[in-house]
Amino acid sequence: MIEITPYDPPQDPIVVLHEDSDIVVVDKPSGLLSVPGRGAHLADCMLTRIQAAFPTVLLVHRLDRDTSGVMVFALTPHAQRHLSKQFEDRKTKKTYLARVWGQLAEKTGTVDLPLIVDWPKRPRQMVDHDNGKPAVTDWRVLKVNETETRVRLTPKTGRSHQLRVHMLALGHVILGDPLYAEGDAKDFDRLMLHSEELRINHPESGKGMSFRAKAPF
Image (cartoon, rainbow, N blue to C red):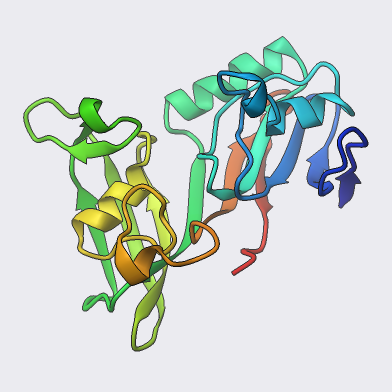
């Protein structure tokens, strides 16, 4: 495991889970954008931080700013094309860990609800059975206490805010969600959602690879 420490301005080091001549895999912290936003105040992001150590780095996919965990970046145009197609064709497997409000009655389940952007409230998304794009999430309960449930989430599609809106639709919003949670469920120091594991095929060798990052909550 390697740490990239940016020097100007001082920032927390970025943990590199894997690197080779084609890809670099990192553990993105919560609160950091994947790519630059609009305006100088949103310039700091995962992509620009990695560029300090890997100048040829190219974006493959994104995590929401408030989500932490495993991200893969390409180091060559070929690797970017290969990995991007894996995500597009749903050949990758992503697993997330979340803490959600309340107690889920069942041990496992699937949410199959189409999603679309809620334009008046963007970037919020919403369920729309007429115009939404297909979105499917499998979930499994790991632990339950009096006020919350710890779940493992496996998205079968990659819609924006998919896990957040699907859990909300179940009546169990993800704790600390600044967009969808309310009241006591919102009163946490971060969004309790973490990209725990990512499985891909290496863009050069074709070998299946799995990368994991332990949830910080």
